[in-house]
Length: 129
Image 1 (cartoon, rainbow, N blue to C red):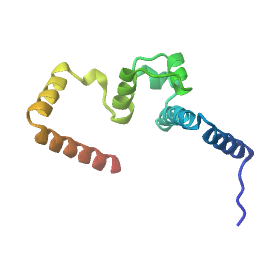
Image 2: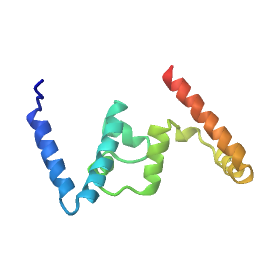
Image 3: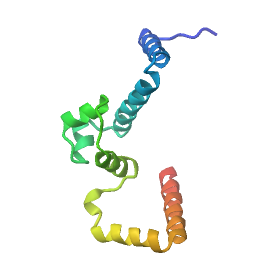
């Protein structure tokens, strides 16, 4: 069996291997991985940059810079996780919801963990259907 590799894939693999083997390899690979994950998430959701980034209050140009490796503030990263990975609509979250969750976590940690696991299991079941 002959393995056929496109020229684009060959060049990409060539440069990735060079990056890994250089002194700054680990740093650059992590940076590249972050960039690819953001872009991949956006593309898998079928959204353009404007649609994807506006849901978390970031302009298209700002989002483009984050996708190409610019450092992203922790609050923006958390919003991305909540909105695009967890599927939470920030407009529906009320302050009291967060307060109740924080109190439950502090006062009844085992109950909080059990409920959290049940919610995860429910969301996995609904995503399979």
